[in-house]
Length: 165
Image (tube, rainbow, N blue to C red):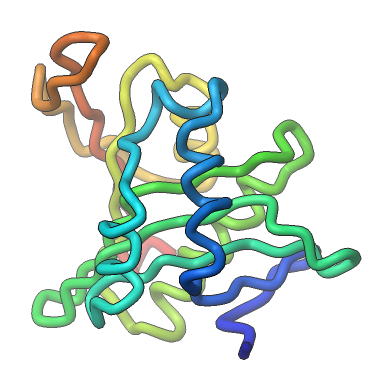
């Protein structure tokens, strides 16, 4: 399997069918499940096979352990890269910042997109602080835009443009 891109401590690979069980575990972990939508095996297989989706896993360079994943959607017509999900299992060690910066770099330098964006629930303060710290702009908030077990949730939109990168 070829490396899609690397960061200082991680290699990022396109996910394969054998990675889906780990992805499902990460999504359903108690520390993560309130902050992201949980997919099914079939949905993740569809994402792997969709040319507009990018389902990737993050593996540590020192031991090849999967410590996270992300799901993105690329609108090639409009040059827009949407980060839909990002999960890190080994929290508090800077892997989130490292992978986010790597994905943004990949978006602008490899895919040649004009806009990178994501949404985040307002109670996910750690992620919001991370997005602000890497120069992302808060574009606005979609009020009560998602219905979950927790009720109607707002989604804050953050983005960065190629010219701001």
